[in-house]
Image (cartoon, rainbow, N blue to C red; front, side, top):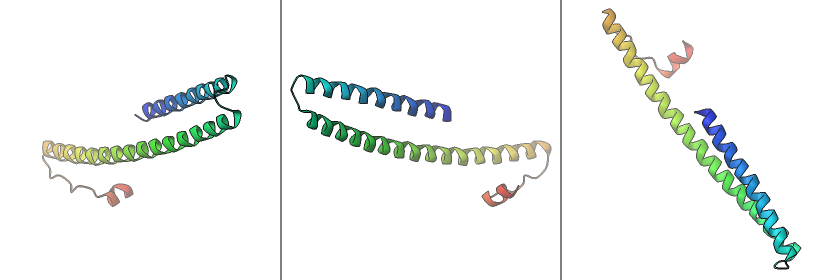
Amino acid sequence: MINALKKTLLVGVGAAVVTKEKAEAALAEFVQSGKINAADARAMARRLARDGRREFDAVRTDVETRVKQLASSSEAATRARIAALEARIAELEGRKPRAPRTKRSAKSA
């Protein structure tokens, strides 16, 4: 799962680089054809870069939040499955199941 996330983020970064290059080429073309002057092109490039960084930061924050939520819910589900399996093993072995471990006792174990 982590590798998939890394690949997805790298694809996004790659797309950003390609987009930046295309934007710079388009702005250079506009300057050459006289549609805008060089100062306006530089201002547009700075604005595009600033907006791109903001968007990237917003997406990164959203992805981090979702990954943390997913990991947290996955951890809780895993703990519940382990407890159920331990109870089932104890039942099959004909002994009393152990009390579920708390987070504190699980860390010290």
